[in-house]
Image 1 (cartoon, protein in one colour):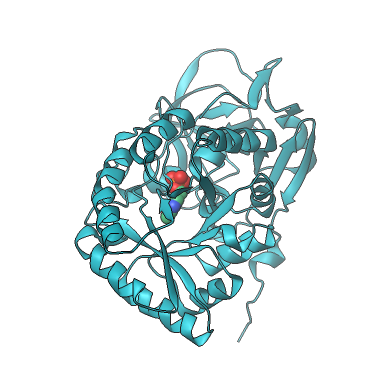
Image 2: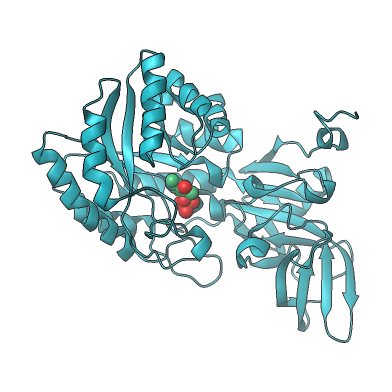
Length: 417
Ligand SMILES: *Cc1c(COP(=O)(O)O)cnc(C)c1O
């Protein structure tokens, strides 16, 4: 999304910062996710700097990449966390992110998850329905605590992104419609066990323009005014996440342009801004490194069969998402349209189709680029494939930040009956 790119070719081979990718592959086998800590720091710092003129808190969206080492690194730089489950609360706290920097989003928080979050003392719940509000009230009363809440409002703006990752249209399941917002705030503010602190919206992911964000703020502002007039003053405006990155040829705004657009809409307001970026922090800080197992040519097609699959990186199968696919050692010669597929028994198991690729031999290393966000976190054990390792680079050093799963991990907790 900005200046620093750690994944560059030197002497025709791919490096992550100062480490040749080939060297890591030699030591730990493939496949593995590989993250650049310097890039994570650079992306977070750029985001933070862009908003320096306004009081703000950056709550990293844990679902984009929830490795403890990633969360810990961001937490040390001042990041909070945007969580969507009890498991993510557990991870954020384990990674050392203070509870008072954690916001909890999601349409289906269970009573147990709500209880855990109140006990932890999180900054606020982003409430998505009136029944959820009742559940939070009930748990807060039971625990004799006050729970801080904001309502997630569905501003009904079109984020112009993939339908699966658009969340702020009126037909989406997220948030309360604007027409119910004022009553919801009135109800909540009359409850002693609740402290109403904010308003929230998150309109979608991989947005490549600022206009939908600006439209959403414009739609929210009259509500803020009405609430103010009725004596309901808020402390936080949470604008969600969703800033896109370059996978192929997109040109999303950088953090500066994004911040300028948002700040011009709120500069006259006293609120603290909460931001929930995920993809824009981690997406281009990570890749997936795999190995070419077999090549196969038919009359119709050329295939590269690699050792990573849709269970390891789901985005191409799930959203027809584009990831750049690069040989780790540059190859000369002509390119041919090639399907890059995994070992899983599904036709949908592909990383790329008809992609121009040079001729490579068995054993060649291949990298799927821009895989730091919604990569490992969406991975599964489908086909009883152990989940892959995660590795982090810092300068000329690297460390395994999650070991590859074993076959024993696959059956952990199972009993023959
Ligand atoms: C997924 C999500 C985010 C992060 O979105 P990105 O597109 O990764 O920035 C932020 N807030 C909420 C509520 C989310 O569900």
